[in-house]
Amino acid sequence: MAGKRRISAALLPLALSSLLTGCINLGGGKPLPSLMTLTPAARAPAGQTLSTASAQAIIVLTPEVDRTLATTRVPVQVTPTSMAYLTGAAWAEWPARLFQSLLVETIRARGKRLVFEEDQPQGSVRLAGRLETMGYDAQAHTVTVRYDAERIGPNGVTSTRRFEAVEKDIDPAAADVAPALNDAANDVARQVADWVDQ
Image 1 (cartoon, rainbow, N blue to C red):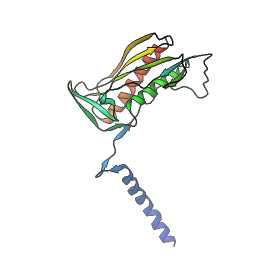
Image 2: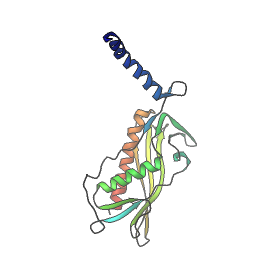
Image 3: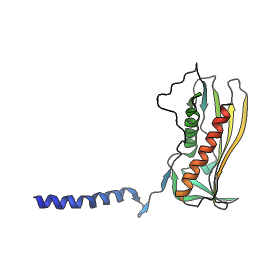
Image 4: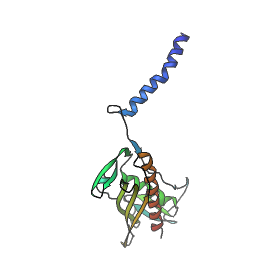
């Protein structure tokens, strides 16, 4: 009996290994793509309390995107007139939604504003915009994040501004592109947070 238990214990790692292999390899043994996300460089501290009496509210809307970003695949500019997608990588969520969440957390971390997503109380500042670019340029070996922001005040006064960040000398591999896109997106989010706080 003890011998059977020892054999079973020895076979357990092999069984687990084969189960895990089945979970992460689908479609003829091809591994799943690396899932990318955006991680805020700054976060609001736990326990932070704001109210409309102490802070102005801002509503951060989901940015508009064109078809190259209306997918979980990572766009690659191959030539000025042709696009492809990065091999072996995909966004964990729609890029517009990831960027919206990054903006929300970056602005919230400043501790100066109540931050809402989508439609919330009237009388708030609204931040809308278009995420023009969030991808890789194969010719320049760069990643670029470009956001055209639109700030609409409670009185209807609107101002616009373009924000951009570029990371250079990036190899065309998911392991290099992912952190570079995260850095560029955080740079743009910081710029936007500075702008809305003016």
